[in-house]
Length: 258
Image 1: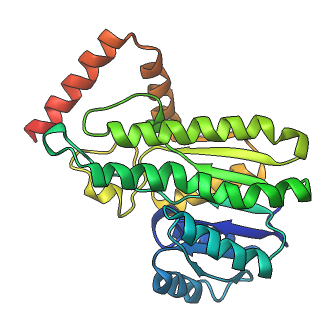
Image 2: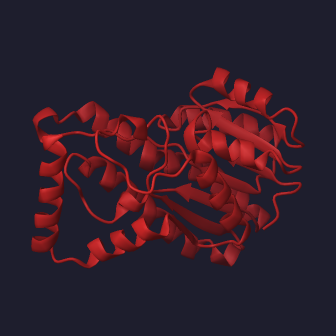
């Protein structure tokens, strides 16, 4: 899949992996349509990338709000009737211990990480199906396999995102539309900077963006990284519940001591 000449939409584009994706893709002669809740930051990123060949057209959008998505996509599709690649990257994460269980944070997590994909897909799927081409790239997480202490809501949201994308991938095959699931491990972003534990094999957002773009070009169905964390997660997935509970409980106690 070549990026040259393509119209590429990116959500959650004002920082972290989203910003790095803009900078990486801006090296190609393409059109980038970044969306985020912070329009001024998108304009700053556009200025930073101004020496590169890509054209960048930022839009204000909160993907957790259905009407915001509907309104901005109506405008985008009026200006850009063809979307070749959509990278649905917007996401939030909160550490929510049971002693501080917070319904507002839980709703924001689900609305952004799951419904954000649903709302965007609702607008994009008719376009892709009519074109009989395109790529829908959804950013999930390696945290989608099991539920961890303080992260159950986040884990659940990423599990839902992964299964949603998997179902779409199969259904969209007859329309020649690719669906790619991106499953990062730990990437240094404003979101992960809040973690109170050591993050193994931490990648920079620039390294993550390069890896994601390289594998989108290869049209890989699943882009999971880094390899060692992915392998460890696959091992955790097959552990019996009793063994997993012991492992996760010990890990949680070690974090609480710090």
